[in-house]
Length: 196
Image (cartoon, rainbow, N blue to C red; front, side, top):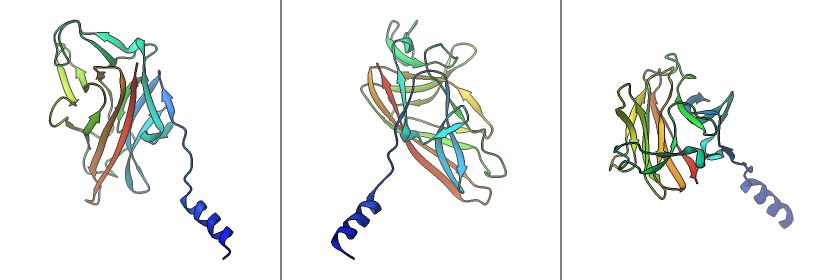
């Protein structure tokens, strides 16, 4: 093979397709898991489209700013945070979690969702607010073990995603489950959130 052809072949072998990140600022989206090609995959769903989390950026602006009305695990009364709310708010992305594409024909168990680590200028917490205002905390980057939760198959739920300072955050999230045949399945992905 001539040197020019060798160089061209090497370039082709090392080439990777370019993926333009999609920035989500409003509307409805879910962080979910699906079985694709026999493997568990973490994906972000918008409408009927599923995307790799590495191709998604969640953007929070001034409409996501929230002042704590009382002291909570996030801080003192009057503390400012940015929040993806549990209930939909105009102009803010409404991010939930979703296992509706998974069935008991595929898995023996629900999906265990774990925040392995988070990095950013502040603290990250994902929690649901109960009927009496108590916080059911799924994840909290302020703890030595940020958190893990098993989500039943067929679930579609929403919670509050709180960020305590402006800047860029990355959340390393792991999904794991047991297949119908008894095999362990897992996938780890990173979700990026930009807060202004």
